[in-house]
Amino acid sequence: MVRDVPEAIIGVGTLTHPKEFAEALDAGARFGVSPGLTAINLRGFQRPVGL
Image (cartoon, rainbow, N blue to C red):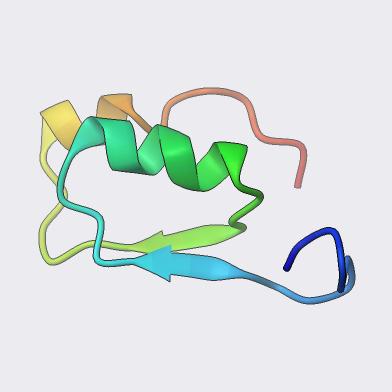
């Protein structure tokens, strides 16, 4: 979807594991939704993002 509509702001949820945060970024998500953010889950989202 990100490739087809680059101007769209795409998000993903429900993220519950660090791997899911990283996969969301790799897929082009601009934001994620989580029922709770723990230090462990945050590690999956701690890489530079060119937004």
